[in-house]
Length: 276
Image (cartoon, rainbow, N blue to C red; front, side):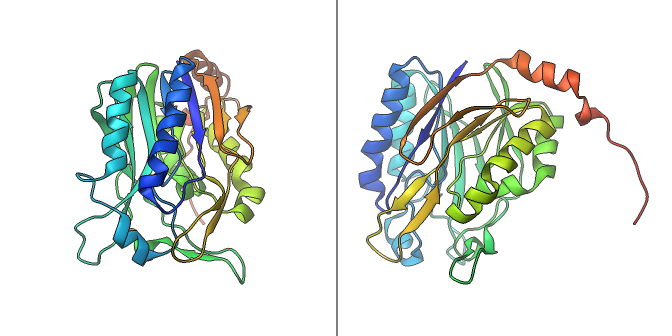
């Protein structure tokens, strides 16, 4: 199966982002791609909770979800919408950060809500408190696809290897990591963590990302690292999108997963131990 990772520079306006995303999906589909992936918060990159409250929609009403489901059906493709920022009915008003796997008939095959919230202080001038605006999910998700099983994660989940081991031990052969990574942590950790998760689990890791400075009509603009990556089950980087919007493609080969896990069967070699 040929997969394509789309790297975006989304703004804080879902309406203006949508045609850009659709055009890039069409471009990837025109290349014969069967599985297309977009980054985290495909619909809206914003640091302003007030602005998000004004422009975000619920899942049932979201224009991006509706349009991309229709596009998947029209093009006959599997589509991972890396994530959408969505309104919920939570009493505290927090949003969800939800990934969608769409079948070629336009149906939703699976959804996953980001579990680990990006609550960090990167430096004296850069901090994030994702849990103030987003509610965390509580369930790991895996879905069946033509090439095998897909495990779904989002961005900061990448730093929690037990999630990836859990997915792989239950049969995931490909794990997705749609992201909007900070430039500081991206430069230091992005490639290393993605390769580690692939090597530890013997899985393909597909990580479509947001990139660049994101235009904002309200609040400060955000910057993201880019470098959407495809990593094979041996830890080899098969594609890097760099720092500009674009598309990278890769052919997924299930036998590569079987070979890596047969060569180093670490997923089945856990040892009981005591202490400390």
